Length: 389
Image (cartoon, rainbow, N blue to C red):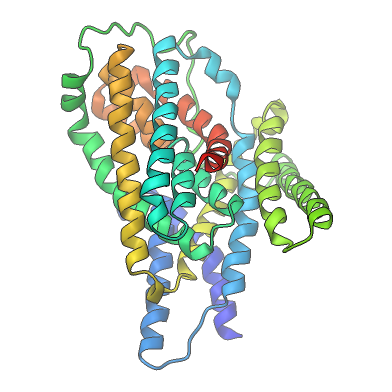
């Protein structure tokens, strides 16, 4: 009982501590989601070592997995609420083409490697589809696709850990060597012109702004819960019609309904303009990440981690090379290609640092818009691509 209480306190308390430190030290360097997984892994390692030492200490797996699924179910609509798809119309043609080419590259590579490398180990094909969603929008898409496809929590956690390893190395490449290498591959004479058709900034949907509970955010939290309940009802109806395990149709229905209804409600200004949407959704994603990582049984990792790292590294590198080749054909400049690639592979939170490194502030707003678009379509893309695997 004491362990369960401590588990619940840590599950909701550690993400709050991480958010308080988001502008300092390791959290600022590696990001809040990576740190949530890191501290979850620390807890999992501590439990593993205690059991090796003969102490019968076990975390409640139901709390870790069921609690994490509830959190991500509520988080997805909140993240979708803040998406302004109308901003896409303001993007200039080269930016739209470059991001579309990235989606094509990621999709093609994920299908190809999912059928080959992914077929070599359990859940490999699902991880490839999850990667397509993640490299279109970000970690929330990866987790959402995994839940939709019924991937075990341990495998989702291993996939996220693998992405932390691969993503850290590749992000260093983007900040250091990407510009000089891309300048050699892409057409130096490409004339980009403006990156936006209309002037105006774009808000980073990952920016954390929390000014306390008020009527707007309480309403949106209730709307998020309503989206989950609609999905649950749909899943229950499908289960009654087909039979089998209730979770098989319930979980995918909740995630798909949450994403679709969240996007639909984002067109309502009163819902979209609540600044705390992203903060609340992001916090729930951190709870999901910490809970999932802390419930991981480290004794089962072994070859699964190596296979996942190899698969995600291959998809990342091959998608990048194919994207650059396509950008060469369509005469997309180096800066535009790098920023749109970052928007897809990493999400909006990483755009400002990259545009600053490239000394191209004009691409900050377009990059943020592409990242938000990736959030919107990533879950659908990843889930749909699994049908091709």
